[in-house]
Length: 213
Length: 346
View 1 (cartoon, each protein chain N blue to C red):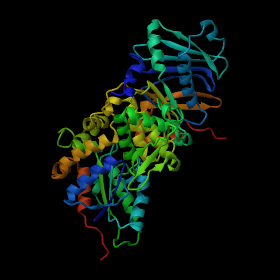
View 2 (cartoon, rainbow over the protein chains, first blue to last red):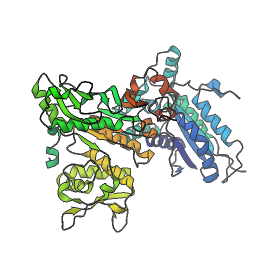
View 3 (cartoon, rainbow over the protein chains, first blue to last red):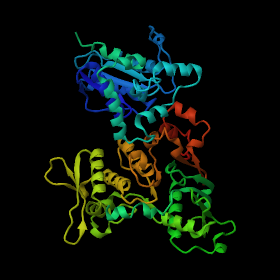
View 4 (cartoon, chains in turn green, orange):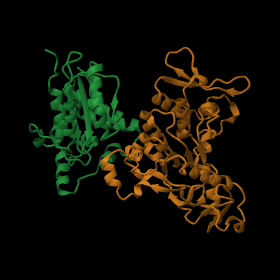
């Protein structure tokens, strides 16, 4: 398996690498270039080009993409219904970009298409990092808070809890983030249960690669 | 502690913290505007909109603060240009006013202070202020060994500064070198050979290569990176640092490291440092750098120019800021014109 990551920062990519390795129980080959987006909605803007590049110019078979939900509607099971598309749900948006970009691609490099692995952290990646440490931090609590109009925590509070400062340096951010991700590596079940946006990423990762038969 | 370290926080003045505000009247394009200054300030705006004028005003304050105060009767001229400064606690009672002979040259300083001793302490802090516009060609030049007390405004004594740190502040030198090799992993260290005449040259070791790459063969961006790192790891930093075009010559992916380096100055505790904070005023034209301040929009200053008149706005003062941050990237919004701070089009 050869994997590429599209993330917003080296810290995000480091976390995703740990979590993906934990899910696969092995160390995949990672494409040397770390692909970067500058945040939402830039990830939507660069994603088609990244998919196209990986499909035609590389032998990468899996692209892992995550985004923060921020204040957008959280993806629900109802969004997974056939033909359903929520225009403001970031999971739906990312999946749609994959679908629309690669639907007319001819097979290349021994596979029909680059496998899509998409997750959305609600409301931010730091919530995943606090899973199991802060019981009140989970996707259901955020969704309920959105419905009531009273959010249980802010993204800034989550970051402060993980990094212990409002202005972490990148090395410090990576160190803190990887330390928390390593907690999850051996057993991802709590993260999967508390964060359906991560569970979706795992489901994608378990899908077979569409090799040319 | 090294000799360099001994010049450190004490040189800020006993309690000097930051310049709280600056107000302009009839100074160049800044006809009637004021700005609250934070510990860290990133100034964006069109060319000729007043970013450099802000820094020039601060430089002039620092230059005049070293001289005897002017006669109040001569400082204020009817309808003349004036720039006034206030200071953070404990110097809330101090107001410094620059009087100008025309709308560009301010050469007289008047100080209003309840307590004369307060101004004396402010002066000590202001005397350490440094302003930088890095020049890669000057930075590549060999420098006399004894010229390395402070990095020059254009960075022209870079080699001498590094050589001095290597001799007198090895801990700071090692930290800078480690950070340099993290930013630019193709390099493995700094070399500073000195000739018989006491002139120091700069080179960087590269991987397993036999000899170092000397300054005349290094890229422009390497010098800008070194300049930023010298400021960031200075064992005796000034109280106030102004840096123009902080993103110049640096790859967009490295701008996070640039931001971290500046935050090391302004928010030392966040980086595990124990020294006093340094007030930073930096300018940029990079939307990519601006993107990195999404979580701290209060640190962004936009210079708005309409016709021949310019004024300052704090991004955090916008009533619709929350909506803007939900809708996209700050850099994109700046480029689009939503935030202002863009050139006028004919």
